[in-house]
Image (spheres, each protein chain N blue to C red):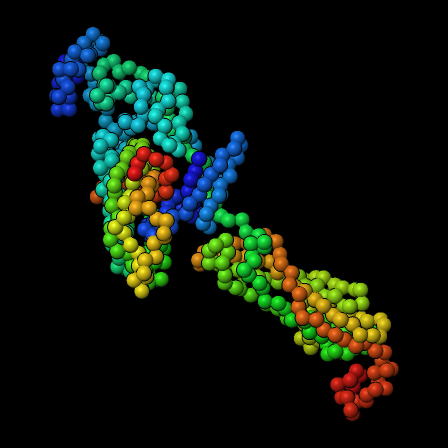
Length: 286
Length: 190
Protein backbone atom coordinates (compact mmCIF):
# COMPACT_ATOMS: atom_id res chain seq x y z
CA UNK A 1 0.00 0.00 0.00
CA UNK A 2 1.13 3.57 -0.46
CA UNK A 3 3.53 4.96 2.05
CA UNK A 4 4.12 8.59 1.23
CA UNK A 5 2.52 12.01 1.29
CA UNK A 6 2.62 14.05 -1.85
CA UNK A 7 1.82 17.67 -2.72
CA UNK A 8 -1.29 18.04 -4.86
CA UNK A 9 -0.87 17.64 -8.60
CA UNK A 10 2.80 16.86 -8.34
CA UNK A 11 4.46 13.44 -8.19
CA UNK A 12 5.41 11.82 -4.92
CA UNK A 13 8.36 13.85 -3.81
CA UNK A 14 10.23 14.51 -0.60
CA UNK A 15 12.13 17.68 -1.58
CA UNK A 16 15.89 17.66 -0.96
CA UNK A 17 15.45 20.57 1.47
CA UNK A 18 13.36 18.30 3.70
CA UNK A 19 15.31 15.09 3.07
CA UNK A 20 18.61 16.76 4.00
CA UNK A 21 17.24 17.77 7.40
CA UNK A 22 15.53 14.43 7.97
CA UNK A 23 12.06 15.95 7.77
CA UNK A 24 10.41 13.90 5.04
CA UNK A 25 6.77 13.35 6.02
CA UNK A 26 6.13 9.94 7.51
CA UNK A 27 2.99 8.01 6.84
CA UNK A 28 1.88 4.68 8.25
CA UNK A 29 -0.86 2.58 6.73
CA UNK A 30 -3.07 -0.13 8.17
CA UNK A 31 -4.83 -2.17 5.53
CA UNK A 32 -8.30 -3.64 6.00
CA UNK A 33 -10.36 -5.69 3.62
CA UNK A 34 -11.94 -2.73 1.88
CA UNK A 35 -10.26 0.30 3.29
CA UNK A 36 -6.96 1.58 4.51
CA UNK A 37 -6.26 3.79 7.53
CA UNK A 38 -3.56 6.29 6.75
CA UNK A 39 -1.93 8.25 9.54
CA UNK A 40 0.53 11.07 8.96
CA UNK A 41 2.86 12.27 11.66
CA UNK A 42 3.34 15.56 9.90
CA UNK A 43 0.78 17.65 8.10
CA UNK A 44 0.57 17.10 4.41
CA UNK A 45 -1.50 18.70 1.74
CA UNK A 46 -4.81 17.80 0.24
CA UNK A 47 -5.16 15.48 -2.64
CA UNK A 48 -7.76 13.08 -3.94
CA UNK A 49 -7.41 9.31 -4.04
CA UNK A 50 -5.77 8.39 -7.27
CA UNK A 51 -6.08 4.98 -8.86
CA UNK A 52 -3.62 3.94 -11.45
CA UNK A 53 -4.25 1.19 -13.92
CA UNK A 54 -2.73 -2.14 -13.09
CA UNK A 55 0.55 -2.72 -14.85
CA UNK A 56 -0.06 -3.51 -18.48
CA UNK A 57 1.90 -6.13 -20.33
CA UNK A 58 5.53 -5.13 -20.00
CA UNK A 59 7.97 -5.23 -22.88
CA UNK A 60 10.72 -6.26 -20.58
CA UNK A 61 11.04 -7.28 -17.02
CA UNK A 62 14.21 -6.56 -15.17
CA UNK A 63 16.33 -9.55 -14.43
CA UNK A 64 17.57 -10.32 -10.96
CA UNK A 65 14.49 -9.39 -8.96
CA UNK A 66 12.03 -11.84 -10.44
CA UNK A 67 13.53 -14.88 -8.86
CA UNK A 68 11.81 -17.53 -10.94
CA UNK A 69 11.70 -18.77 -14.48
CA UNK A 70 8.87 -17.01 -16.23
CA UNK A 71 5.78 -19.03 -16.78
CA UNK A 72 6.82 -21.36 -14.00
CA UNK A 73 3.77 -20.39 -12.00
CA UNK A 74 5.73 -19.24 -9.00
CA UNK A 75 5.62 -15.62 -7.91
CA UNK A 76 8.71 -13.48 -8.18
CA UNK A 77 10.75 -12.80 -5.08
CA UNK A 78 8.78 -10.10 -3.39
CA UNK A 79 10.31 -6.70 -3.17
CA UNK A 80 8.83 -5.40 0.02
CA UNK A 81 5.79 -3.25 -0.85
CA UNK A 82 5.82 -4.26 -4.51
CA UNK A 83 2.66 -6.17 -5.37
CA UNK A 84 2.44 -8.49 -8.33
CA UNK A 85 -0.42 -10.11 -10.17
CA UNK A 86 -0.43 -12.93 -12.72
CA UNK A 87 -1.34 -11.73 -16.16
CA UNK A 88 -2.03 -14.71 -18.41
CA UNK A 89 -1.46 -12.60 -21.52
CA UNK A 90 1.84 -11.10 -20.51
CA UNK A 91 4.77 -11.95 -22.74
CA UNK A 92 7.87 -12.71 -20.76
CA UNK A 93 11.19 -13.23 -22.52
CA UNK A 94 12.86 -16.54 -21.86
CA UNK A 95 15.87 -16.08 -19.66
CA UNK A 96 18.81 -18.44 -19.97
CA UNK A 97 20.59 -19.77 -16.91
CA UNK A 98 23.31 -17.17 -17.30
CA UNK A 99 20.73 -14.39 -17.20
CA UNK A 100 20.81 -13.48 -20.86
CA UNK A 101 17.76 -13.55 -23.05
CA UNK A 102 17.29 -16.46 -25.39
CA UNK A 103 16.56 -15.28 -28.91
CA UNK A 104 17.12 -18.44 -30.84
CA UNK A 105 14.75 -19.75 -33.43
CA UNK A 106 12.00 -20.60 -33.01
CA UNK A 107 11.48 -18.13 -30.18
CA UNK A 108 9.41 -19.96 -27.62
CA UNK A 109 6.26 -18.00 -26.94
CA UNK A 110 5.82 -17.91 -23.24
CA UNK A 111 2.47 -16.56 -22.28
CA UNK A 112 1.69 -15.49 -18.77
CA UNK A 113 3.88 -13.70 -16.34
CA UNK A 114 3.95 -11.66 -13.19
CA UNK A 115 3.33 -7.95 -13.65
CA UNK A 116 3.73 -5.33 -10.98
CA UNK A 117 0.57 -3.77 -9.60
CA UNK A 118 0.66 -0.02 -9.34
CA UNK A 119 -0.44 1.09 -5.90
CA UNK A 120 -3.41 3.32 -5.22
CA UNK A 121 -1.97 6.58 -4.01
CA UNK A 122 -3.58 8.62 -1.30
CA UNK A 123 -2.45 12.05 -0.26
CA UNK A 124 -3.05 12.88 3.34
CA UNK A 125 -4.03 15.96 5.23
CA UNK A 126 -4.81 16.28 8.90
CA UNK A 127 -8.49 16.33 9.90
CA UNK A 128 -8.70 19.36 12.13
CA UNK A 129 -11.68 20.12 14.33
CA UNK A 130 -12.28 22.88 16.83
CA UNK A 131 -11.28 20.38 19.51
CA UNK A 132 -7.72 20.67 18.18
CA UNK A 133 -7.68 24.45 18.68
CA UNK A 134 -6.93 24.39 22.42
CA UNK A 135 -4.00 26.75 21.88
CA UNK A 136 -6.04 29.28 19.93
CA UNK A 137 -8.73 31.64 21.21
CA UNK A 138 -10.55 34.09 18.98
CA UNK A 139 -10.67 37.74 19.94
CA UNK A 140 -14.03 38.31 21.65
CA UNK A 141 -16.53 40.77 20.21
CA UNK A 142 -17.70 43.84 22.17
CA UNK A 143 -21.39 44.43 22.93
CA UNK A 144 -22.76 47.98 22.65
CA UNK A 145 -26.16 49.59 23.13
CA UNK A 146 -27.91 52.86 22.59
CA UNK A 147 -29.22 54.64 24.47
CA UNK A 148 -26.35 53.83 26.82
CA UNK A 149 -27.39 52.21 30.08
CA UNK A 150 -31.00 53.42 30.02
CA UNK A 151 -34.01 53.07 27.76
CA UNK A 152 -37.77 53.59 27.44
CA UNK A 153 -40.26 50.78 27.85
CA UNK A 154 -42.15 50.17 24.62
CA UNK A 155 -39.51 51.72 22.40
CA UNK A 156 -36.70 49.94 20.55
CA UNK A 157 -33.38 49.75 22.30
CA UNK A 158 -30.53 49.21 19.86
CA UNK A 159 -27.86 46.58 20.50
CA UNK A 160 -24.92 45.61 18.33
CA UNK A 161 -21.60 43.75 18.42
CA UNK A 162 -18.30 44.96 17.04
CA UNK A 163 -16.05 42.07 15.98
CA UNK A 164 -13.81 41.29 13.00
CA UNK A 165 -12.06 38.22 11.67
CA UNK A 166 -8.90 37.65 13.65
CA UNK A 167 -5.82 35.48 13.14
CA UNK A 168 -3.60 33.94 15.80
CA UNK A 169 -0.35 31.97 15.73
CA UNK A 170 0.32 28.96 17.87
CA UNK A 171 0.89 25.20 17.86
CA UNK A 172 -1.58 23.02 16.00
CA UNK A 173 -1.01 19.25 16.01
CA UNK A 174 2.52 19.90 17.30
CA UNK A 175 3.45 22.20 14.41
CA UNK A 176 3.50 26.00 14.17
CA UNK A 177 0.36 27.22 12.49
CA UNK A 178 -1.94 30.19 12.06
CA UNK A 179 -5.65 29.97 12.78
CA UNK A 180 -8.08 32.54 11.42
CA UNK A 181 -11.47 32.96 13.12
CA UNK A 182 -14.34 34.49 11.14
CA UNK A 183 -17.61 35.47 12.86
CA UNK A 184 -20.58 33.65 11.37
CA UNK A 185 -23.46 34.33 13.74
CA UNK A 186 -24.36 36.51 16.70
CA UNK A 187 -26.62 35.82 19.66
CA UNK A 188 -28.17 38.49 21.88
CA UNK A 189 -29.79 37.62 25.20
CA UNK A 190 -31.85 40.52 26.56
CA UNK A 191 -32.23 39.48 30.15
CA UNK A 192 -35.99 39.30 29.97
CA UNK A 193 -36.14 35.67 28.81
CA UNK A 194 -35.94 36.68 25.17
CA UNK A 195 -33.05 36.31 22.81
CA UNK A 196 -32.16 36.54 19.15
CA UNK A 197 -29.65 34.68 16.98
CA UNK A 198 -28.76 35.56 13.45
CA UNK A 199 -26.14 36.61 11.00
CA UNK A 200 -26.55 40.34 11.70
CA UNK A 201 -24.16 41.89 14.20
CA UNK A 202 -26.09 45.14 14.12
CA UNK A 203 -24.72 48.70 14.20
CA UNK A 204 -25.47 52.16 15.50
CA UNK A 205 -28.70 53.83 14.46
CA UNK A 206 -26.79 56.50 12.58
CA UNK A 207 -24.70 53.94 10.64
CA UNK A 208 -27.96 52.39 9.52
CA UNK A 209 -29.36 55.86 8.69
CA UNK A 210 -32.05 55.40 11.32
CA UNK A 211 -33.32 57.77 13.91
CA UNK A 212 -33.17 57.30 17.65
CA UNK A 213 -35.53 54.54 18.88
CA UNK A 214 -36.27 53.46 15.31
CA UNK A 215 -36.81 49.72 14.94
CA UNK A 216 -33.49 48.00 14.16
CA UNK A 217 -32.81 44.39 13.18
CA UNK A 218 -30.84 43.66 16.37
CA UNK A 219 -32.83 45.92 18.61
CA UNK A 220 -35.23 44.89 21.39
CA UNK A 221 -38.34 46.35 23.02
CA UNK A 222 -38.59 45.99 26.77
CA UNK A 223 -42.22 45.70 27.85
CA UNK A 224 -41.69 46.05 31.59
CA UNK A 225 -39.67 48.57 33.48
CA UNK A 226 -36.73 47.20 35.41
CA UNK A 227 -33.00 46.54 35.26
CA UNK A 228 -31.87 44.01 32.69
CA UNK A 229 -28.52 42.31 32.16
CA UNK A 230 -27.77 41.91 28.50
CA UNK A 231 -25.40 39.21 27.26
CA UNK A 232 -24.20 38.28 23.79
CA UNK A 233 -21.88 35.83 22.08
CA UNK A 234 -20.24 35.41 18.71
CA UNK A 235 -19.99 32.11 16.84
CA UNK A 236 -16.81 31.75 14.74
CA UNK A 237 -15.80 29.40 11.98
CA UNK A 238 -12.08 28.74 11.68
CA UNK A 239 -9.40 27.97 9.15
CA UNK A 240 -5.82 26.82 9.68
CA UNK A 241 -2.59 27.26 7.79
CA UNK A 242 0.76 25.51 8.23
CA UNK A 243 4.02 27.20 7.22
CA UNK A 244 2.56 29.51 4.60
CA UNK A 245 0.64 26.67 3.00
CA UNK A 246 -2.95 26.98 1.84
CA UNK A 247 -5.75 27.89 4.27
CA UNK A 248 -7.87 24.86 5.08
CA UNK A 249 -11.19 24.66 6.93
CA UNK A 250 -11.51 23.55 10.54
CA UNK A 251 -14.56 21.41 11.26
CA UNK A 252 -16.99 22.90 13.76
CA UNK A 253 -17.44 26.34 15.28
CA UNK A 254 -16.50 28.08 18.53
CA UNK A 255 -18.76 30.38 20.50
CA UNK A 256 -17.16 33.13 22.60
CA UNK A 257 -19.15 35.49 24.87
CA UNK A 258 -18.84 39.25 24.69
CA UNK A 259 -18.92 41.65 27.61
CA UNK A 260 -22.31 42.14 29.34
CA UNK A 261 -24.31 45.35 29.69
CA UNK A 262 -26.80 46.54 32.22
CA UNK A 263 -29.78 48.65 31.18
CA UNK A 264 -32.54 50.39 33.18
CA UNK A 265 -35.84 50.51 31.32
CA UNK A 266 -38.45 53.02 32.52
CA UNK A 267 -41.81 54.30 31.27
CA UNK A 268 -41.65 57.35 28.99
CA UNK A 269 -43.57 59.54 31.40
CA UNK A 270 -41.11 58.69 34.16
CA UNK A 271 -38.18 59.60 31.95
CA UNK A 272 -39.66 62.86 30.82
CA UNK A 273 -40.56 63.94 34.32
CA UNK A 274 -37.01 63.36 35.52
CA UNK A 275 -35.35 65.40 32.79
CA UNK A 276 -36.14 68.19 30.34
CA UNK A 277 -34.47 69.10 27.10
CA UNK A 278 -32.45 71.88 28.73
CA UNK A 279 -30.89 69.76 31.45
CA UNK A 280 -30.79 66.62 29.30
CA UNK A 281 -30.56 67.71 25.67
CA UNK A 282 -29.85 64.08 24.61
CA UNK A 283 -33.01 62.79 26.28
CA UNK A 284 -35.75 61.09 24.28
CA UNK A 285 -37.83 63.38 22.09
CA UNK A 286 -35.37 66.31 22.30
CA UNK B 1 23.43 -23.52 -31.57
CA UNK B 2 26.28 -22.52 -33.81
CA UNK B 3 24.37 -19.44 -34.95
CA UNK B 4 23.85 -18.33 -31.38
CA UNK B 5 27.55 -18.54 -30.67
CA UNK B 6 28.43 -16.46 -33.70
CA UNK B 7 25.99 -13.66 -32.82
CA UNK B 8 26.77 -13.44 -29.17
CA UNK B 9 30.46 -14.16 -29.20
CA UNK B 10 31.44 -11.08 -27.24
CA UNK B 11 29.08 -11.70 -24.34
CA UNK B 12 29.01 -15.48 -24.24
CA UNK B 13 32.66 -16.10 -24.82
CA UNK B 14 33.41 -17.10 -21.26
CA UNK B 15 30.57 -19.59 -21.04
CA UNK B 16 30.53 -20.75 -24.62
CA UNK B 17 31.85 -24.20 -23.93
CA UNK B 18 29.55 -24.81 -21.00
CA UNK B 19 26.58 -23.59 -22.91
CA UNK B 20 27.32 -25.77 -25.88
CA UNK B 21 27.18 -28.81 -23.64
CA UNK B 22 24.05 -27.71 -21.84
CA UNK B 23 22.18 -26.66 -24.93
CA UNK B 24 23.05 -29.63 -27.06
CA UNK B 25 19.91 -31.46 -27.89
CA UNK B 26 17.72 -29.03 -26.04
CA UNK B 27 17.45 -26.43 -28.79
CA UNK B 28 16.19 -27.45 -32.17
CA UNK B 29 18.58 -26.58 -34.96
CA UNK B 30 17.16 -24.63 -37.78
CA UNK B 31 17.67 -21.81 -40.19
CA UNK B 32 19.54 -18.61 -39.30
CA UNK B 33 17.59 -16.64 -36.71
CA UNK B 34 16.11 -13.28 -37.63
CA UNK B 35 18.10 -10.25 -36.57
CA UNK B 36 17.44 -8.68 -33.19
CA UNK B 37 14.14 -6.81 -33.50
CA UNK B 38 14.78 -3.08 -33.59
CA UNK B 39 13.07 -0.95 -30.95
CA UNK B 40 9.93 0.92 -31.94
CA UNK B 41 10.38 4.49 -33.08
CA UNK B 42 9.27 5.98 -29.75
CA UNK B 43 11.30 3.77 -27.41
CA UNK B 44 14.44 5.16 -25.87
CA UNK B 45 17.73 3.74 -27.12
CA UNK B 46 18.80 1.85 -24.00
CA UNK B 47 20.11 -1.51 -25.08
CA UNK B 48 20.31 -3.20 -21.69
CA UNK B 49 19.31 -2.96 -18.06
CA UNK B 50 22.89 -2.00 -17.24
CA UNK B 51 22.73 0.97 -19.59
CA UNK B 52 19.39 2.03 -18.11
CA UNK B 53 20.69 1.85 -14.56
CA UNK B 54 23.83 3.77 -15.47
CA UNK B 55 21.81 6.57 -17.03
CA UNK B 56 19.42 6.67 -14.08
CA UNK B 57 22.29 6.74 -11.64
CA UNK B 58 24.04 9.56 -13.46
CA UNK B 59 20.79 11.54 -13.49
CA UNK B 60 20.07 10.95 -9.82
CA UNK B 61 23.65 11.80 -8.92
CA UNK B 62 23.31 15.11 -10.73
CA UNK B 63 20.02 15.73 -8.93
CA UNK B 64 21.62 15.15 -5.51
CA UNK B 65 24.85 17.01 -6.06
CA UNK B 66 23.24 20.00 -7.75
CA UNK B 67 20.58 20.26 -5.01
CA UNK B 68 23.34 20.21 -2.39
CA UNK B 69 25.34 22.86 -4.24
CA UNK B 70 22.30 25.12 -4.53
CA UNK B 71 21.44 24.74 -0.85
CA UNK B 72 25.04 25.36 0.17
CA UNK B 73 24.93 28.65 -1.73
CA UNK B 74 21.76 30.01 -0.20
CA UNK B 75 19.55 28.92 -3.07
CA UNK B 76 21.58 30.72 -5.73
CA UNK B 77 21.27 29.75 -9.39
CA UNK B 78 18.64 27.10 -8.79
CA UNK B 79 18.17 26.77 -12.56
CA UNK B 80 21.20 24.47 -12.40
CA UNK B 81 18.79 21.75 -11.30
CA UNK B 82 16.62 21.98 -14.41
CA UNK B 83 18.56 19.55 -16.59
CA UNK B 84 18.20 16.68 -14.10
CA UNK B 85 14.51 16.83 -13.18
CA UNK B 86 11.05 17.36 -14.68
CA UNK B 87 9.45 20.80 -14.44
CA UNK B 88 7.06 19.61 -11.75
CA UNK B 89 9.91 18.37 -9.58
CA UNK B 90 11.93 21.53 -10.23
CA UNK B 91 9.10 23.71 -8.93
CA UNK B 92 8.76 21.82 -5.67
CA UNK B 93 12.51 21.52 -5.13
CA UNK B 94 13.01 25.25 -5.66
CA UNK B 95 10.29 26.04 -3.14
CA UNK B 96 12.31 23.97 -0.69
CA UNK B 97 15.53 25.79 -1.57
CA UNK B 98 13.78 29.15 -1.08
CA UNK B 99 12.36 28.08 2.26
CA UNK B 100 15.86 27.20 3.49
CA UNK B 101 17.36 30.41 2.15
CA UNK B 102 14.57 32.56 3.63
CA UNK B 103 15.32 31.13 7.04
CA UNK B 104 19.02 31.81 6.55
CA UNK B 105 19.84 28.12 6.52
CA UNK B 106 22.73 26.66 4.56
CA UNK B 107 23.69 23.08 3.71
CA UNK B 108 27.17 21.76 4.36
CA UNK B 109 28.64 18.54 2.99
CA UNK B 110 27.35 16.34 0.23
CA UNK B 111 24.75 13.62 -0.20
CA UNK B 112 25.74 10.49 -2.09
CA UNK B 113 24.24 7.38 -3.62
CA UNK B 114 25.18 4.38 -1.49
CA UNK B 115 23.43 1.93 -3.80
CA UNK B 116 20.83 1.89 -6.54
CA UNK B 117 18.68 -0.96 -7.83
CA UNK B 118 16.62 -0.98 -10.98
CA UNK B 119 12.97 -1.82 -10.32
CA UNK B 120 11.48 -1.60 -13.79
CA UNK B 121 12.13 -0.34 -17.25
CA UNK B 122 9.20 0.33 -19.57
CA UNK B 123 10.51 1.47 -22.94
CA UNK B 124 7.15 1.99 -24.59
CA UNK B 125 6.36 5.24 -22.81
CA UNK B 126 8.23 8.45 -22.13
CA UNK B 127 6.79 9.01 -18.65
CA UNK B 128 8.01 6.88 -15.77
CA UNK B 129 10.22 4.94 -18.15
CA UNK B 130 12.46 3.85 -15.33
CA UNK B 131 11.79 3.16 -11.67
CA UNK B 132 14.58 2.49 -9.24
CA UNK B 133 15.28 2.20 -5.54
CA UNK B 134 18.06 4.41 -4.24
CA UNK B 135 19.89 4.33 -0.94
CA UNK B 136 20.95 7.92 -0.24
CA UNK B 137 23.64 8.64 2.34
CA UNK B 138 23.42 12.03 4.10
CA UNK B 139 25.84 11.19 6.90
CA UNK B 140 28.14 14.02 5.80
CA UNK B 141 25.29 16.51 5.38
CA UNK B 142 24.46 19.21 7.89
CA UNK B 143 22.06 22.14 7.58
CA UNK B 144 22.91 25.08 9.80
CA UNK B 145 21.21 28.36 10.60
CA UNK B 146 22.81 31.77 10.84
CA UNK B 147 24.10 31.01 14.34
CA UNK B 148 25.83 27.92 13.02
CA UNK B 149 23.45 25.62 14.91
CA UNK B 150 22.32 22.48 13.15
CA UNK B 151 18.64 22.32 12.24
CA UNK B 152 18.80 18.67 11.25
CA UNK B 153 16.14 16.53 12.93
CA UNK B 154 17.46 14.45 15.85
CA UNK B 155 15.93 11.35 14.33
CA UNK B 156 17.50 11.69 10.88
CA UNK B 157 19.21 8.48 9.78
CA UNK B 158 22.44 8.64 7.83
CA UNK B 159 20.88 6.52 5.09
CA UNK B 160 17.37 6.53 3.64
CA UNK B 161 15.74 4.61 0.84
CA UNK B 162 13.82 6.35 -1.90
CA UNK B 163 11.83 5.13 -4.86
CA UNK B 164 12.61 7.31 -7.85
CA UNK B 165 10.98 7.35 -11.25
CA UNK B 166 12.44 8.89 -14.38
CA UNK B 167 10.91 10.29 -17.57
CA UNK B 168 12.67 9.90 -20.90
CA UNK B 169 13.99 13.06 -22.57
CA UNK B 170 16.26 12.71 -25.58
CA UNK B 171 17.52 16.28 -25.16
CA UNK B 172 19.33 15.78 -21.84
CA UNK B 173 22.80 14.38 -21.44
CA UNK B 174 21.61 11.23 -19.67
CA UNK B 175 18.28 11.09 -21.59
CA UNK B 176 16.44 10.81 -18.27
CA UNK B 177 14.89 13.24 -15.81
CA UNK B 178 13.92 12.57 -12.21
CA UNK B 179 10.10 12.61 -12.23
CA UNK B 180 9.45 11.59 -8.63
CA UNK B 181 11.42 10.73 -5.53
CA UNK B 182 9.46 9.42 -2.59
CA UNK B 183 10.47 7.86 0.70
CA UNK B 184 10.29 4.08 0.47
CA UNK B 185 9.72 2.03 3.57
CA UNK B 186 10.88 -1.32 2.26
CA UNK B 187 14.10 -3.06 3.15
CA UNK B 188 17.00 -4.49 1.25
CA UNK B 189 18.30 -1.41 -0.52
CA UNK B 190 20.30 0.42 2.14
